Length: 493
Image 1 (cartoon, one colour):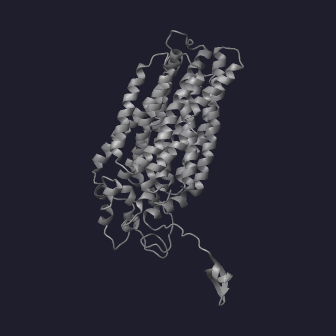
Image 2 (tube, one colour; image 1 turned 90 degrees about the vertical axis):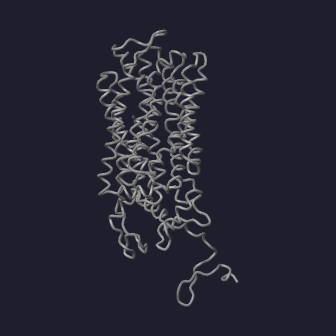
Image 3 (cartoon, helix red, strand yellow; image 1 turned 180 degrees about the horizontal axis):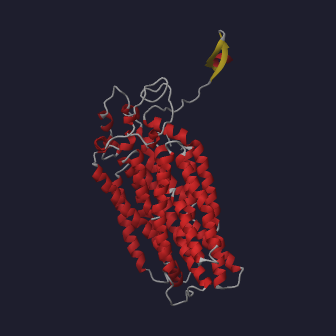
C-alpha cells in the first residue's frame, strides 16, 4: 500500500514537493496527466497522521528529530485561505460538495434498507422462504463487491465525477425498473438487485476520496462523519481494520434485513400483533420503528465515535482503532440481550437494540479515516475498493443469506408454528454477537501497528521513505581488522 505505483515515472517524484530547490509549480504541472482536475490537497497537506506527536525522524530535514529542524505547529493545519489555494475551491463550495455527496449517500442506503422494511410482504408476494429472502441482499452485495475494485482502479486514473454520475444514473434506472416485476419472476428481482450494485459501487468507492481531497486533519474527520451518517442513517493496521470493518458489515447486514422480520415474529408470539396471513398486508410498525432507531443511533454513534476518538487522540495515538474495538466489543453483549429478551419483553428488546446499534455505529467514520492516513493519496480509491470487497465478501454479502439458511434448517426439525419461526430466526441471529466480538479483537490488533504504518505513509508522501534495495550476493568477512562486505565470487576465487 505504500508503493507509489502509477505516480512514479520519468520527470516526477513526490519528493519534489519538499525539495527546497524545486518550485511547487513543477508538481502541479504533472497533474493533468495524472487525471486531477484540481490539486489534491491530501497529497500535499498534512493528514491526521500529522496531528499527533509521532516523535522524531532522525536526519530528516524539516521534520522533528535530533538531526533535523523543528517543525512549527503552524504548519500542521492550514487556514481556510491556504486550503483554498491548494484545492482551488472555496470552503463554501467544498461544504456544498459534501452536502450533495451526503444526500446521494442517504438515498443509497435508503434503497438498501427499503427491502428490509417490506421483507414480510416480499416473502408473501413471491411465496419464498427465509433463505431466498436472504439471497436478495446477497446478490446485491456480491455484485457491489465484485465491481468495487473496478471502480477503485478507474477512480485512481480517470475523472471521478463522470464515473460517479454515470453510476448513479444507471442505479436510478435499474431501481425504478425493479418496481414493476411480476410475482412469477422472482429471478428478475434478483437480477435487478445485482445490477443496482453497479451504480452503488461506482459511488461508494469514489465519494470518500473526494472528501479526503477537500479537507485535512480534524476537518476531514468531521466531514467523513457527516458523510457516514447515512450508512446507519498494504499495512498491517489497514488489513486488520478492514477485517474489523468486515465484522461490522456482517452484523449490520444481518440486522438491516432480518431485524424487522424478527421483531414482527416476536410480537406475534407475544400476542401483540396478528400473524401475516396469505392475501393480507403484514404489519409495518416494527419496520418503521426499527428504521427510526437505526437513523437515530447512526447519527448518535458516528458523532460519538468521532468525538471520543478526537479527544483521546491528543494523549493516545492509537485512539482510532481502540475506539472501534470498544464499540464492537461493547455492542456484542447488548445485541445478544436484545435477542434473548425478545420472548419476554419487546420494550427491553428495543432498548438493547438502541444501545447495541449506537456502539456499533461508532466505527463507520473512524475506519474510513484510518484508511486515509495509512494509505498514500494516489492509492486511496484502490484501497477503498479492496476494503469494500473484503468487508462485503466476508460480511454482508453472505450474512443475510447465511442467517436465513440457518433459520430454515432449524425450522425443518421443529413442528410448523409461529413459535418455531421466531425461535429459528432468534438462534440464527445470535451469530452476529459472536462475529462482533471477533471484529473487536481485529481492531485491537490494528492498534498495535497503527503508529508505524501512519508514519511510513506520511514519509512516503513526503518522498522520504524509499523501498529497500534488492539484496546482492555480498557477504561479510574480516578484512584488515574489521568486518567488510565483499562479493561472494571474490571469496570463492
